[in-house]
Image (cartoon, rainbow, N blue to C red; front, side):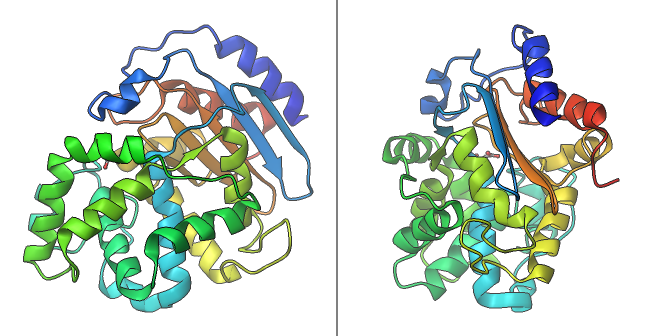
Length: 303
Ligand code: GLU
């Protein structure tokens, strides 16, 4: 059934031009073709289906915030919540005002301020954060061909003024423990990971499988932790469009300014959609539209 619906919607949406822009504030992202469109669904019973540019790697950007959070949460457990919250931000993903009003405590781990604090935590608790984070992604996806893009990280760093400001602002409140330059270098690297829709759906499948790696049954997160990560994705995964995404799609999700969106149907499947043209909130126009139609036509969401 999925295959048929995905195929039909792909044909329907393929040539539609949405009113939006490719993220150009990171120069390297602006080089991607606007017409890219890929979809991949993987379920926990080993069925899968992909169409379009689903095997082409793209910059996952903020989608990686879920993975860096999972690694920190796995290590720290509930103690992590002294450093950040679980409330939707209701403002832009790179808001400085919110950090000022919240005394350096980010609203959630999926906005930039929260992800910077998570990078700080990982730098404090891991011996080799870069290698260990990559290893965590590779293990989750059962795929050794996952890499950072040094080129994209460098490109973002060259214009990363807001993130540099954010990191320093949080540091001024004492909620960054390490050197802001080290946090920022690691943060840009984490954002630069490149995955295809296929890689992405496979990497996130453990969140559809109660925290267990579906490829080898290893426990990545406890059942309760996986539930909570899905809950935060539901309420905070699409910046200040998380309410709209919940309303239209009805699944936990996470977007990135590279144009990807991952959505999870717990105990069922993971679906990754990529199309680089973004709306004003920074979410992929076509991926949002596709997922809304997909959950409507399959009549399957968590609500
Ligand atoms: N690296 C991007 C930034 O910090 C991530 C933004 C995103 O994908 O939402 O601006």
